[in-house]
Length: 158
Length: 259
Image 1 (spheres, each protein chain N blue to C red):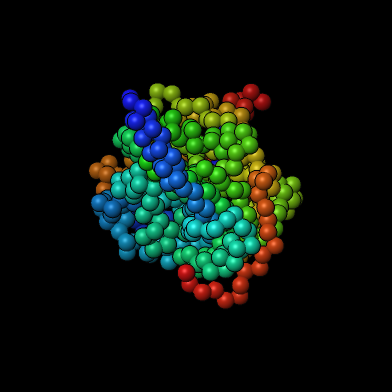
Image 2: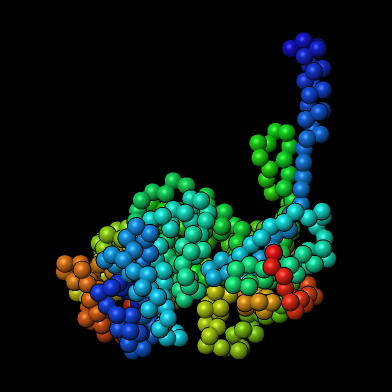
């Protein structure tokens, strides 16, 4: 490789670096039959206040509305053929009640036998019970956050 | 072994939904496995839309139903990551569990299902056939949540679970030489060649494989049909139920023998 070639390559690399991109997204999670329904939108920053306002406008099938959201950042460098997730936030729950395994067990509700079994079997100590639309129960992990959130009374379709 | 559910798969036009309700009323631990195939719906073992509608509209509270998906419904989910059965079926919410029938056909790519499991919390259990072909994948996902949680990573798995159905014959209805050991702490299903003529003997063998507190269910299909395979035989179903009732809901097998 000649000096000129080396210089050209360095110049090209510097230009390509300018094409490295990162973009933030927020994914809203709503109750589904077997799996949570999800909708993903771009967002300027990992801003929970903005995401909470966006959540007010999200409606999935069967009028399911978000119980939680999570931020991700996707990035792509010139070396990457496609972008990939480079950072993921914990879950931010849009309100909800935290219940411990001990509380669920003490209640001993026959309708909650599967919940008790799943909590015990999977080692989940705490769950969040959310009723923004359809009831949804999800494990609360160490870094997850339950936000002070009240769903709007009337919702607009997406 | 703690047997708490008995699944009969393949109810179809040869029986009326209300006949199933009557059996469930007497034996509430029964689960009806309903087969779904885009290609075969309306034929033997795969009830028609009208029959399904009758079932759904009249289903009493507490009726246990599982949807057993075959063919394209499975391929869409495990390869493409699109849950087309759930998105198109009238009322998937009546089903408590979804089973993916691989029929021992190698699915080279399970990336779609992997993507779903990584991205969307599960509400109700998915049953995956351990048919000797996909066992490694099933085992990985059954145990994954614990492994990753212990490493401090966030895993978006919900309370629903991925559970294994040990069916070494891949749905061909053959009794295995040895039943697989139950996975510790995991709800496991056992299937393959079970029927009224062998259920007690096989449950005694399963109890050895699923010793201690292991919570399990059993599933049968071929051997509760008529000899010519045209009819879902409710007499055979009730015969099985009478035979398995002593095994239900309490420890059984080697623990009890030792006690």
